Image (spheres, helix red, strand yellow):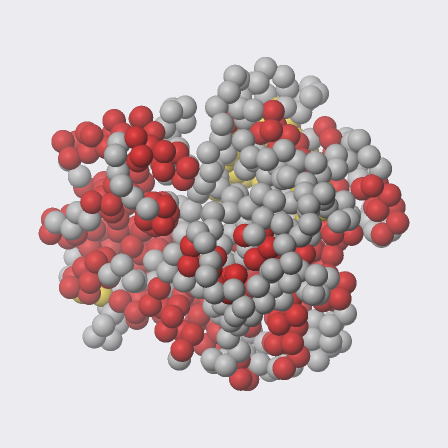
Length: 557
């Protein structure tokens, strides 16, 4: 299951401890047990190959030098990959006896669903204080590597404990069924959502957020940790208050590393993955690239490298040019553009380090970033980037639920066949293998699109209802009765039109929250009457380019 890692084990060498003592002197001492005793979600097999004995590829493309790119394997992400089946693990995951979670906490409502665990609200009985609890099903940890992934993530969380912008771990518990990780509750929303809600956004504020993000990267690197999956979704505000701290929440793909140690396994998320990760020879510099992509989006509202397919995105990451000509870039300071350019250098040896980024004039607290509002179009673009194509996801799911038992009997059996462990959830790799078994001749890019269309709640897996919706998408079943049923689902009052309020109700029901649909709705509303009629809805459902049109248009306005 992936490559063996030769990254340093903090329990077996003194590198991490020595760096901690020498570099991060302000870090407060940790309370509680050793980090090696704790555990958390095993989201991926992040073990990496150390290739220190190999020479790096000197042909890393810069600018437009490399034009012909072979098919690039999709990076492993925090979701959507196959876990190898093996004998069940009999040993304790935490390697120690723990108290019973429910003796200490009252477990409340579900906050989120991931591929290998569910996050709940929990309340400490003695104090009434609220926390988040991730419960990881032990049956999902089917190999020793899986267990090591779990232990390493929690080791890293403990190792970074005390940093003001890293989520705090409170404790870990284990019972016969699951491992439970209790952490501080971050209820202030995601990075982009908070910006959108403010409705007022300056370049100086963007610099402030960038300083926090790169500050986390610097702390990680100084302590021998490489994050490997920096993206906006992994930054949450601690609470709803105006000055709430921004927290990094997910270390499922993170690794300990030594200076000069190189890794070869592909991990990360398409928009944010560094070119050297795609070329399978990288180290901590990949985090600077990802942070640079986030800063680019903070300043203009769209990612720097975009395409209709993931393969296309990877090719753009490897060879595409940065756009500083389209709006709003002409009105953005030259200092901001200078920093982004230096963070998005394709040669990692020439890329700025985290300390160098923090010394850049634009990002410093008393720096040169202007305090004037950014173009209002930036907020609109952020809204559209966040909401892209979610309407269609809901509609496909609704159509699937209208199918009769006769229509879906075969799909029910197919789901059981693909869901080999009977978990009720299918990963992307399991979906690929299952479709191959039944003779579905689909390209990887088509299966990825299928997964994206089906995974309405963005959990990274497909449940039964979502699977039926995915098959519906494959077969392009656009019968009138099915389409009208989906339209009627949104059209709550039966008026024959879908309003923005009705769209918001649907999004709320599917747990997608307040994503400000006005701009996305206007893309569907061709006659600009402020509502979506049936013909406009059908056109949106049948338009394979929906969502892509939004981003491409935004880049040329």
